[in-house]
Length: 103
Image (cartoon, rainbow, N blue to C red; front, side, top):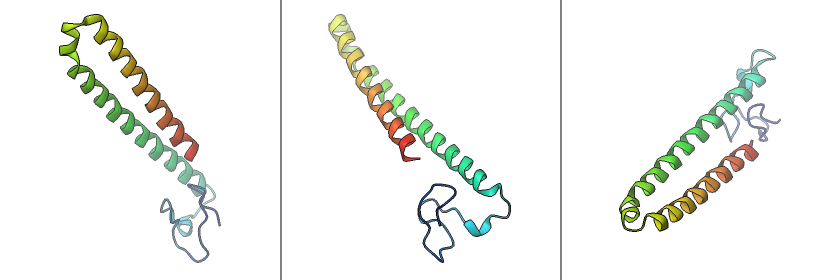
């Protein structure tokens, strides 16, 4: 049987999905698989938001650390900072795309 929450295969006789922990035996209505899917999507969105917040905080810390260099060479520091920001944002976008493809 396929898990209604994450789509993984649930082995015969198993009480819970080995990947996400959803309990097919707990389903008491036809709406339960839909609710489980919505719950899984909400969890994914929360995880993605936490990862984005973490990446943003790391990026802010790196930019703050480079503030001293900006005083010595403003143009060079700005160019380098913009390149770093671009790379970081690309990495975050790839991570979010990966999360979305997993589901």
